[in-house]
Length: 117
Image (tube, one colour):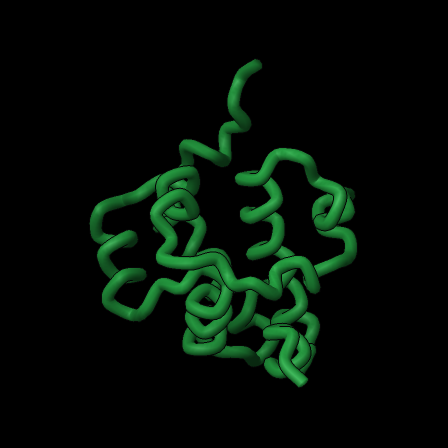
């Protein structure tokens, strides 16, 4: 079976689009970064390294320091699919990130986005 095209796309080519989507709705790059750090365990230096090295999505998630243990709390529909029902683990991780950025752009509070009480 052929891998979805997004797996081989550079994370750095999509990252500015996440920021653009957030900023259109009066949110910030810092909030986008906070979501990425929360989800993947990357820090600022790690994220910058990923961007500098033009790492693809597959490598971005495979080399993520630690996926947040609360990812199972991320539910809902993104791109027409329920994120909790996506079978391919990598596609699910990509869609988790999409869902969190979408929630940010919709004005949700960071505490809710990051699934904290």
